[in-house]
Length: 434
Image 1 (tube, rainbow, N blue to C red):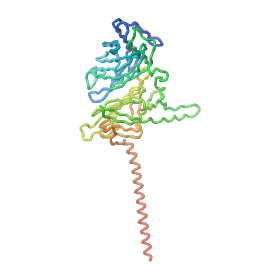
Image 2: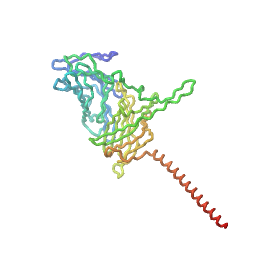
Image 3: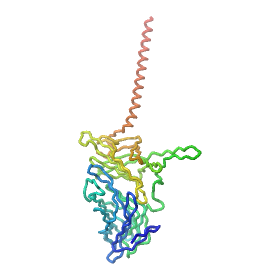
Image 4: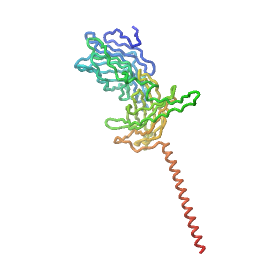
């Protein structure tokens, strides 16, 4: 039977025992399939129902010790083995399996009045060469994330059309077009809806280019008046970010970030540190800082150590990845990366600092401007930055005034010496007249 759609969304389709319906999802980078799971109990009554779309953005290490981003989406060969109804003493479980050894599940518990998701378990298999063609680590990798879903009233359907994301351990999970009810009573899906915060009128989704954090940097000509001067864009606020390995801080960063996106119009996007979270990985020779600004924008900075066998080792910024998503449906607005940088070079055990504005050219359509930068991706001690090595443009700016000052000082000394010797000679000439 072909799926039918109405302007208000998908029409309910006839359900069978433990059926799974796959519908082709949105096109683009995150092409995915919509999944509908209807779990039945022993009496063939619906006890757990869910329909949603999801995709995964996974950062993995390659055989050359670099890091790449892989996109994993649901395919047409999805199963839902292991899904169970749950009861007052046992958690309900919604589980799906797809692709070459990938699986995802979420469990639900309930009280007398509400139900909620407790945690999500996601397993991806790096033996899937179509997704991870050069993965260094082979085999299944499992991550468990505590879900942040608010409790939902029993008999209510939880609905969230906007994109939600959960990030942990180099994996970002995206969900959208979600309809869910756990612990369905009497086999009947509830008529009342509980909406996620992103769907409420007071927190409308943010969509480029109408985002409040985006400033249009363009000039407007009003004929016959002359071209107006664009309003200056304020520099972004400086954020402080850190990563931990166990209980020990392994990476420190202080920076203000501004994205310069060249699409139909140049867009300057200031990254707000108040809503930005940091995640990533630390290693002996490679480290990645991932920033999620809370508005479906992700920036990855990858650092590596060069001259690893030399006595004096240095680190530098090697790769930057930027992904901008549509907050409503999870589709990619922009995805760009540059893995040929040799920026922010400093001695291992030191930090790199540059107070001046710098520009990272990701590609022709995207630049990143940095302000008040200080970064230390390796050998952090006592949660503090080590001695900083300034960027070369700033060092040059210090050398020029020092050189000019030294020259002026030398000139003053010469003038004083000339005056002193000239005055002394004049006095000696006066004595000879007597």
